[in-house]
Image 1 (tube, rainbow over the protein chains, first blue to last red):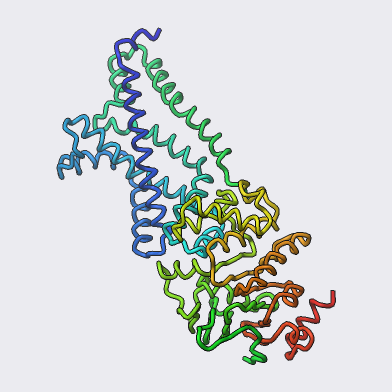
Image 2: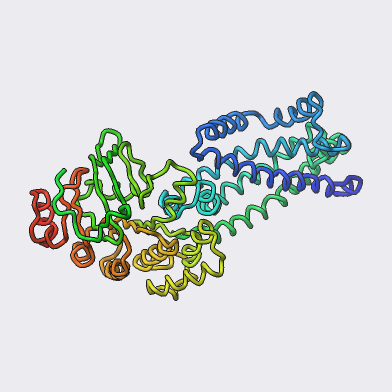
Length: 222
Length: 259
């Protein structure tokens, strides 16, 4: 019944999806944490930038951001992110777009996590002579992260599925292959859908279960 | 404000007082919480700050290391005026130990990590040296066997003693106690007070905001009585408890000493 699959590299396409997800997740986590730091910083300019960035970027449709990466950054400004072929350039541009977008959700999750850390924790750290950056890095963020593993899991799962948008600039991930197969295998269209739906569930379900356990284990006891 | 006796303690003219507050005012919105406070705490003096709740005693204590910035007036610690928020202030705070009502031990770190964090990250002491010192301090406050547990696994009294060890690990010049026993179950108050008394006996300069009259009588050199943001009485514990000068102090003592 699934004979048609032998003619396509479904695993290869999902491997691209996994790579997009992993690189974007790492980038979003880093940039999102920096943004969250800015949003709680005592420096007004940083706070203003963080707030403006988050409120602008998270309200732009992801498709628009990804297309802007290709049309704006690459084709107009010639930013190729050191990619030597159009394939690697588009792959990297897509990751940049996902990082810019997903980091806003990471930032906001983390900020709500920061609010769960009692003020006294930061006060005690300041009273020891730690500076703002040290207090954030050593005391507040470690506790904030542990309390938002759940929400961050949702962000990660959303990111996994959002990577399908990369097909709009020709990145050969799972959904691009799906479009191709829908055209070529129109007689088994249901099976094609099922294959890809299953593929995404296989990617995201274990991640959710695993991080659910991690969240329970890492929770800070007060 | 009226000041009675200046209290005991070895105030010498050559060295600056450990803490000096001059014409300090602080507002929370419209509420005037500190009214023109002038105090000097000489080295080695143990000052207990008493007063009804809302009298500004905690705010005064927190103002000394600028956890609460004041609106006007100056505060000096060891002759240095409190700098604005930044590196210099962090350096000054490192020399001022603080113990909080809610302990505020770092919840994600073990007890010994709580104690070593400051010395390692602020004083740049090596991890092994910091650990040795930390274990000595934990031994001294009687919870060395709890060193690898997390704060939530300890009783309130043990947590507060760990918090005292954490502050002492920085080798502070002065220790501030902001109602250190107010969040404790009654049977745990004594163990914390004993730790504080031994610290006082060793000559540490201490400012203690508390409701523990026994501690004030036993360990304090000087009592400041605050009401409505003002220092109303400034005397020795003996004088304050046996012969309060103001009606407000008499009223306060009447309320707490009768039960």
